[in-house]
Image (cartoon, rainbow, N blue to C red; front, side):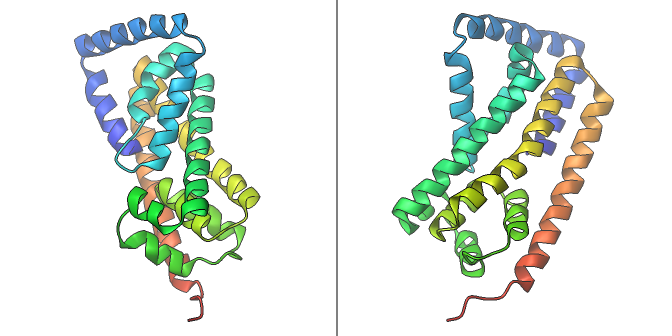
Length: 213
């Protein structure tokens, strides 16, 4: 997602007229947000939470105007808090309603495969890698269904989502300021990190002991 956002922002930023037009839209949005100082951040957090729960929905397109309106620090904090809320909601729904919720929010065989390989007593390091390597909606559902301890899940969620929130915000900020070098560097780092985390998780998943039948 970060790489796709980087490519889209780079294409828009390369054209002076397009970039000016986009910033003009951001300026108008900033005025609207200034008129609603509580509703704007709350809506941004809600949309961020939904993006952490549904694979087909993403809030990253809202990050550049949010950076323009509130600055990178506030944007990263709101994005991180929204993703935390979304992960907690996924965890709570799976804990309360079980497999029907998983079939609705994350259909397919992958979730069931992860569920078979994860144990309630899994190490914190493995859970953190699980949270880092997969889309955010999957770990919350799997760990909620597994009744993984809430406090350990929240710590892993907070640690995993923070670098993504910072990286996504930096991408948005680099577009606003037209810092092409930073934009390209962040995209390369995001792609490399995704590959390394995916490989590390597959290795750990393959070596994890299976739950006895």
